[in-house]
Length: 310
Length: 109
Ligand SMILES: Cc1cc2nc3c(=O)[nH]c(=O)nc-3n(C[C@H](O)[C@H](O)[C@H](O)COP(=O)(O)OP(=O)(O)OC[C@H]3O[C@@H](n4cnc5c(N)ncnc54)[C@H](O)[C@@H]3O)c2cc1C
Image (cartoon, rainbow over all chains, first blue to last red; front, side, top):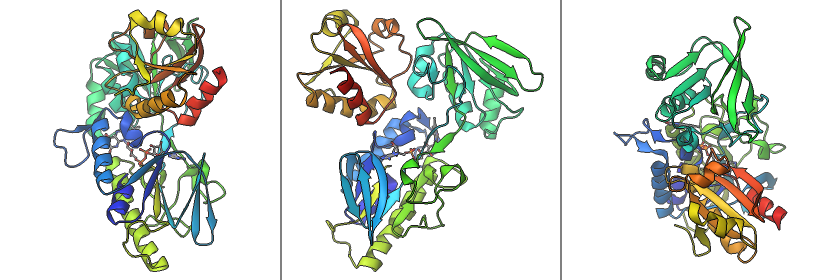
């Protein structure tokens, strides 16, 4: 979205292609506490809404559609979508990540029936019951804390014996009266009743080898994210794990193609870093279009950056 | 805001408006506090226009209407269910691309 804002403000003819709704993962975030400019924090939904309005003020055109493939035709890049194809001079890939699946029995079958990847969306369905959270990073810990508003008890399962989450979150979660942490313990199966509603989990203690069962009604999985890059296969060589490598200017190895946000190989995946990447990518795309093709900042030039999502 | 083609249905009206409908009904279970629900709302509205006369499109607020979501075991929103002849024909959880919803609708038609 930030790439779109900068590119549109630079008066490039810019289109943002989004398959679901602009805003991405931020829409699933209840409260954003670490984006600068909001001293009290801001809801994910409001932050997205503000970014979108700001970008649209500069003329960003948001198109709903899924990009299925990119290809090259001389100095043009073709953005293939389900129903149409766009010819453009520059593309910024900002397709982010999606949650990793745990891969245990019951997970896929009972998604939406007790298995969830979004506490903000589904937390309120678990008033007064026990739930399980799996993971040890910031997201898992934040969501475990959020779920204490509804659940009678939150079981946090972590496969290691210490949390990866930042200090302030670690402290909050280890001292919270409603949260019980199961160290070095993994889930091996999710059980449901005959209505296919989750009723419990089987867990395995990696140190002692002991298994046990817990009667939870919700299982929230936050075991990492994986980049949305399958549409780039055959066009861009991807880094291990499927991320897109760029240089410090956000350029990929394909001329005319930049990447920004969580989809990139980098250390810190946050809204503020994604926005920073987006600005850098759009700035460089603009310079590239200007020097390489001689388009000046005239609006409505054909072929300008197409910020692929966010 | 729902467009003209989208009905708002309550627990009390569910039987009459959804289960007894002569054409399939897509019900979008949502709540005000759910970001992804806002995300797919425009898609649902578009579909109501595109499938008008063939599929009825309804929205149910799960906060105001706890009974129906309970009956169908809904524990995640947005959940989209296509009812055909009073039965669950298709079910989709989470904000998904429009093409996936269209696929589900095409299947029941
Ligand atoms: C639960 C949770 C809580 C978080 N909390 C915080 C927080 O408090 N503070 C913070 O700074 N960060 C937080 N983050 C991280 C933050 O959300 C991400 O760093 C940020 O959203 C990355 O933005 P992005 O634009 O790179 O990717 P995304 O937000 O993932 O957006 C990618 C977009 O691309 C679209 N897309 C993907 N493929 C295609 C395609 N082929 N065609 C068209 N569109 C496509 C997707 O639909 C999506 O909208 C949180 C993440 C999660 C999951």
